[in-house]
Length: 480
Image (cartoon, rainbow, N blue to C red):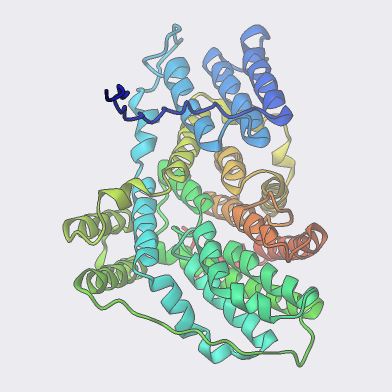
C-alpha cells in the first residue's frame, strides 16, 4: 500500500511590512519645538502684526525649526509649508481670513513655477549624461592634459568637477567624480595627499554649482524670488555675475589644497579611457544636450526664455524617447519640491506683511546698502554651514527681498544673488552639504581638515562676493 503523500503547497512569499523610520532625539526635539513654535503666535498677540501675519509667522517659525533640526525630511517640510499657507492665509483658509486673501493657486502654483521647470530640464539632462556616460567620458577626455604631476591632476579634477557641477547637481557630480578617482586615491600615499585629492572634489562641486542657474537649488530659489518681484535674470546674465567669482574661488581653493596637502614633485599618472556611445539614442541625447546648453547661454541672441528652453529640452528628450517615464520618475523630485516650498514661503512672507514686520525688528535703515549686503552674505554663509544650503536660502532670501524695497541703494538683484552664492559657499562640515558627506564617507578626509579648508574658502569667498562683486556687476551693466 502506497503511503499517502502530503500534497505539495507552493509557499507564498510573506509580505514584509515596512517599518516606520525611527526618530532620533534630534527629530523628536525638532517635532516638539516646531509644534510649540507654530502655536505661539496663535496664543500670544504679536504687536504690530495683523492676523494674517501672525498665521504666517506660525508657518515661518515651524519651517525654521523643522529645516534647522531636520525633524522631518526637508522636502516634507516644504510641502507642509505650502499646505499650511493654503489652509491658513489663502482664500481657501479653514479659518476666517480678515481682509483680502490671496488665491490658493498662488501657493500651489509654486510647484509648477517656471524656475522649477528650468530645473526639471537641467535635472533630466544631467541624468541623461549619466545614462549615456557622457559625464565620465568628458572627465576622461578633459583630465588628459593634467596628468603627470599630482598638483596638476588635482587642478584638472577640480576644473572638471566645477564644469560638470554647473549643469549637474553637486551631489551627482561628486558621486560621478569619486567613481572616477577611486583608483587614483589608491595610487596616492596614505595621509595628506589622499585627503587633499578627496577634498578637492566636494570643494569644486560646491563652488562650481554657483556658475549657472541650474547648478544648485539656492540659485533657483533666488531666481524665483526675483521673478515674483518683477526682476528677470537671464541664464547668461547669471553666468556673467557668478562665473568670475567661481573661477577666483576655485583657483584660490586649489592653491590652498596643494599648499596644505600635496607636496611639490609628487607624481601621478592616470590612464582613463573614454568609451563613447554611438547608437542613435546616445547621439540624439548629445545633440539635444548641446543645443540646450547653447540656447541657455545665447538667450540674449534668440530671446527665448531660459525656463522655456528647459521645458523644450524635456519635450525633446521625451518625444525622441531618449529618456522615458522611468527616467522622469527617477529625477530628484524632493529637490524640486524643496525649491517650490521656498518659493511658496516667499509668497506667504511677502503677501501677509510678515517680511515688513520681521525686518522692522532690526534698524536696517541705520546701515548702508553695502553694510546690509555684507551682513546678509555672512549670515547666509554661517547658516548654510549648519543646515542645508537650500533650507538656508529658503529662509533668508524672502526676507532679504523685503529689505531691498526699504533701503536706498540696495538692489534686489544684488541681495538675492549674493545670498544664493553665499549659501553655496558653506562647506566646512560633513553635514554642510551632500558632496562633503560623500567625501567624508571615503575615510580619506577628517573633520578638522574639512573644517580648515571649508572655513578659509567660505570666508574668503564670501568677503570677495560681498565687497568686490556688486561693484563689478554694476560696472559691467548687469544691474538694472
